[in-house]
Amino acid sequence: MATQDDTAALTKPAKAAPKRDDAPHNGQVMNVERADFTDLVPEGRAPVQGMDGFDPCYSDIVDYIIRCTHKIWDERDVGLIYTHYTHNIVLYLPTGTIYNREDVVRDTIQRLVSLPERRGNATHVIWNGDDKDGFYTSHLVTGSGRYSQNGHYGPANGRTFVSRTVADCMIHRNKIYREWVVSDQMAIIQQLGLDPQAYAEKVARSKLSQGLTQLDIGETGLMLGQYPPAEKADLSIAGTDLERQTLSWLHEVFNRKMFGKIRDVYAPTVMWHGPLMKELYGIASVMHQTIGLIGAFPDAVFAPQHICSTPCNEGGTKVAVRWVMEGHHLGFGGLESLGDPTGKRVQVMGMSHYHYKDGKIVDEWCVYDELALLVQIKLAQLADAPAVSDIQQA
Image 1 (cartoon, rainbow, N blue to C red):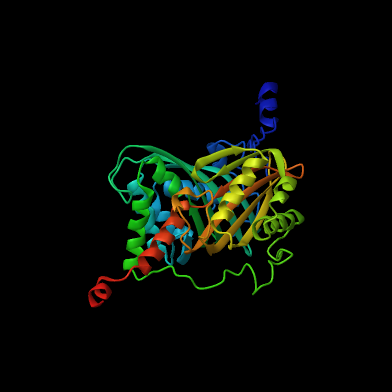
Image 2 (cartoon, one colour):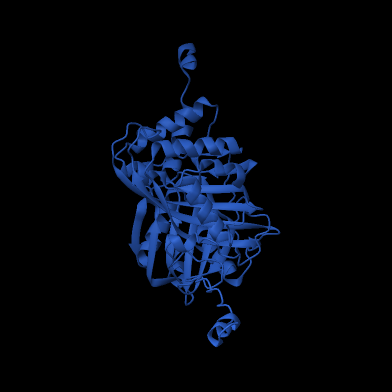
């Protein structure tokens, strides 16, 4: 017969399972800001958005892109590419395009061979979409490491490096089917103490041997005949008022050359995080860097390809823009490695992340690869050079 104490113990309600601490996300899709890595790859976190068709370890799209990137690159589970990329993946790079999954696997392994100590730290992920129509993510990574093994950069010298990369991915049911990657290779080349001119020519000669050339094909599309640039920006890719405002001022600055607009959209205390790991402050610095890029390619058309935005837990909103500039190397600018104007046609693939707060941009992260531009110029110059057989015949 049970005692009074035993009865009390039997009838005492079961203690509720402790609620899982989801800080700093609080049941929302993750923000990378203010979160340590362990907070970004939580174990057993329930999905906080529709993730139909995704592996059960992913609780939201930010979790997906950070976790699988870390597993592939830092944990060396390269084979996850087979379950996270389609067989016919198209991967766009500033110096070429990959068209299948096997080449993605091979390229990943080669990069791990050359930089075995590299680690990639997620800086932020800006995204849109859903699990029905597909997600789009823009993932900024700050990579650091040491060149400790012979590879595609040549003999290892043990030097350290830090560089930025942005990867934009289109994802559906756990698989990336299209990706754009801009990595600041020039920052790595310079920090490793290599000669950018020699390295760029080596890459260009390799491409020339494959039958690739980069030749002038006419107007860039900035203007039609003798008309000035379009008065208004094409806003068809924007989904919010802030995205439309961003496309409008980018058109004013880059295509209409109204550089004074920069004063209207940037905060006086803006921080500009640019190629070659530049860390600059203030509106004057932003204006100088912008004019420096346009100065090298004054006839270039600036064409945004995609834009998306997400709220930021630091306050305000972050906006990601993937863009292309196409023009000719007609002037002097802030890209010192290009030297004197060559007149060669170039294409700049770039990614920009803007942090708006109280109506102004307080941070900008801009990534494009100066080395890719130098390779294009070298390739065009090599293609112009007469072949040995032509010289002999002459």
